[in-house]
Length: 161
Length: 166
Image (cartoon, rainbow over all chains, first blue to last red):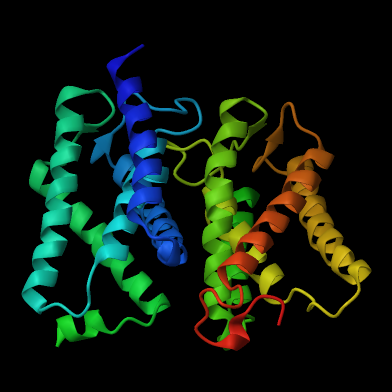
């Protein structure tokens, strides 16, 4: 089996375990909604990103049906966003909220770069590492705004003011 | 412009128009229905194309995706939101509810069969109209189950009016 396949299996396992262990029962609905919002936004944004060659996925789950990576887009990153969203604390100061956000997107970018460099799951085209960092930040930001609207969370308005 | 593109364009226009029929106090329920339907269509849409059961010769984002983005991401989820939001309430008889399922599913299936017959938007390869009917009906059912769970009493609810089945 290719190393890429082990990576994919690990992502599914880690995703499931993470979602079950790190999201409490009472936050399950919040977690599901965040997951679905991120999935929907990443699906929409990756279509033009892959069309215009920003990045590509040489080894993927459904090579005939799509050029997009399924595990990352459909499951793994949405789960990570959902864990991020459920554990964010709106009561904390602005700075700690910013740091929380940046630590998360930096960690995910780092993971993405590792995947790009050491496997064929992702291949950056025009995109650079800081481009990916901005892209993930953008995806997180848009998803965050949508989720906050859904749960009527006022923290972002405070962030903006 | 080819007829297929006009149909795709009108799907976007009709979808947008349908959004205005969503009652304001049930917007969140519609959002959950749309998102959950996308979870289903995203995966299953890929599976059926990968297995060579269906083909979408004319499609959006043709170079990176062989599935129908317009139908799976946009049009079908919006129809599902309308389906969920206007679902007949709990006091109605089971026949009315079943009729509601059958009505929506049949209309969608008839449209798809006609589109298959007269345009190149979709081609059945190892597929039959009744497979569409059953899968569409089941996907409505699972989306409704998810919405019922999501807006269950005692669970998450912003306004009690937004509960499914009210």
